Length: 274
Image 1: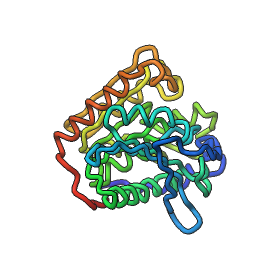
Image 2: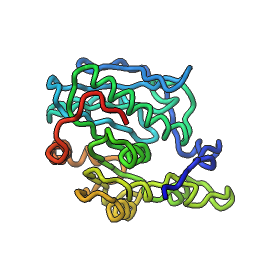
Image 3: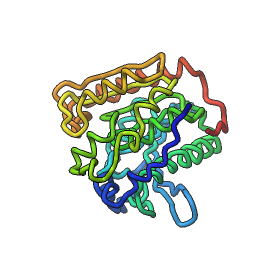
Image 4: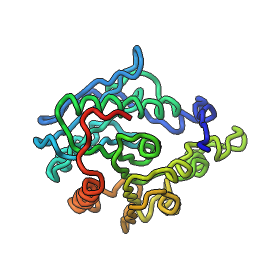
């Protein structure tokens, strides 16, 4: 039976302050990119920045970034995905970039579902028929795994520097979890959720990640329920320099994975909603 999670202990101010590093950013979209405001609820709009290829059948990569990042940090990355024939759709959390609202774990997870519904409807309205794959980096793995475990519209999952267990991360961030009365059952639930993922999955992790150790990625890979799953350890890398170390090979590897996703699922049905 699926565990019902409320995330109320992670929504405590002291925990949220350690997990989220929001910053406002008004960097204009570069040439070739589109900015979108995605309404979550009255008064709360998330900013998204889309880098779309000319091919309406190209795969769409919906991306959730790390806790100290904003979508404009990926202005150099989006075109590199486009070079590989991939449309790259990055979305901020509440309080980040041009988004309004205040970040919280429960809101981040609920918003992921709202974002997915908005994006799938928007893609259908634009006549873009390519598969939709979710990707999460670091904290963004929470949103991506949540969607891959529960939403039919998701064709595949990519996890970079992802979280398996919540308590070790909270310890690393300086929180006294015992004093706060938090145990693993109060956490993100990524291990339980990835066990329900049936979509093709690709997990990438740095060899020397000191924020989220490599052993966490190995746990995610071990428990992932997908029949088609791949694991890539990046030698010599740490939490924040995987792309810098691997360069074009990074994007080529993701392209190859996305090709396999496309072969296993075929074209996306227009207008599908999770």
